[in-house]
Amino acid sequence: MSKAWIKEKLPEFVRDMMRDLCLATDILESQFTMFDQTNQVSFEVLHDLLGEEMNKGLLWRLKDTAHHLFRNDGKQDLAGQFLDWSIGYIFHETMKLKEDAYQQQNYGPWFRDLMDRELPEAEHDISRELFQVVLQT
Image 1 (cartoon, rainbow, N blue to C red):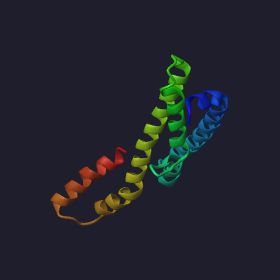
Image 2 (cartoon, one colour):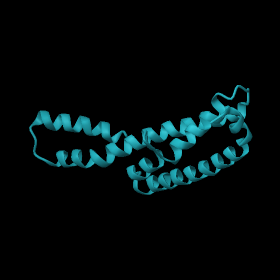
Image 3 (cartoon, rainbow, N blue to C red):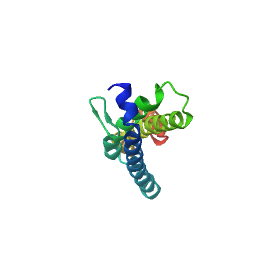
């Protein structure tokens, strides 16, 4: 993409970014509501929102677009830089939240099961300590 083409299409890019930011916000708000009700968030929903390196999701594409538009534009447009930083921050916090959801979904049940078992004292103590780590996520 040439810089001239990006500059020419900037209003359309910004419009699309705001649309995508609203969509991402709606998805995250639904996860916050779910957490308030169930004390859980959905790993699958967060995974879809973020995507992966080779199959980027809505929020990842939004972050990349903000970087292209506002990070290296050569101007001192603070509003654009603030937006770029904010979207990047949301992206990285959502990555952390996704990892926490993964721990809760995949290891929480396992540790709960271990806590209910008759284990040797050392293994029970280790299980309890590791379970505390999962509970902090």
